[in-house]
Image 1 (cartoon, each protein chain N blue to C red):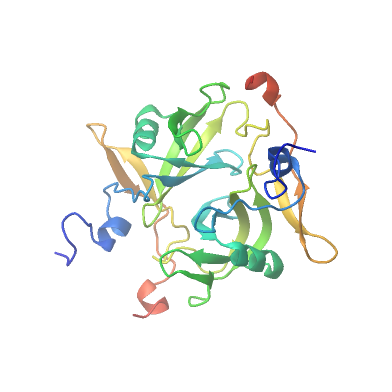
Image 2 (cartoon, rainbow over the protein chains, first blue to last red):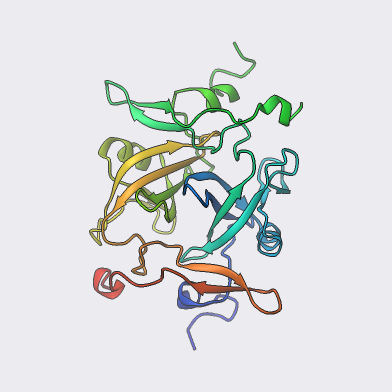
Length: 147
Length: 147
């Protein structure tokens, strides 16, 4: 018994329980981090609504919700660069999900393996400056995503 | 030359440029994924405002912005579990940051190394069910965060 209302599970249930109770934000989304299961590299950060999470859990392939296009999408639906999900984890407060995947092709729409192809360094004056790292293109975006 | 207004950098600058131009959301935040530099494990997902990002870049230790407490915080400020930042990366559209860190103590306020200590499995009927993984507590939260 807790002091929380029935519709608001106690913090302990959220953090220590074995029931999946995603804490969707005002837009109905949780944050999703997707890493390469072999290298551990972060491939992308995206969002999932309840349906995307459900489809990912049930299908074993990654589905997301596009905030810009305002629709569900399966990763690789146009590029063929699907993500086979080896493991899904949820964080302590259940507002973020971590997918460990096998990435077909490359994850980033720019053609890179990962969306994180630039490191934040500092220039001589200490100001931030980006440096390309692991930025080789594995495909030509113009061929994969025709206008 | 682009068709964008000067105050709205062209997509190509955002994705291919070497200038840091974080795309803060309506609340002034970017998403931050923090991984353990050795294991590749995702330790936590949090948020940064401009000041947190600036302090992280300049100090080499991780600073975040707490949405619940509505304030800047340095990871480890009360627990001592600071994060030494080995690398910072930014993603293609510059609305997410990836920190590779050396974690002192443990990252999660529940005492676990990572906030992602539960795997989403399915029960016999196919419904989602959480399984504890890597869930040993490395510290006692009651001792680290006194009420």
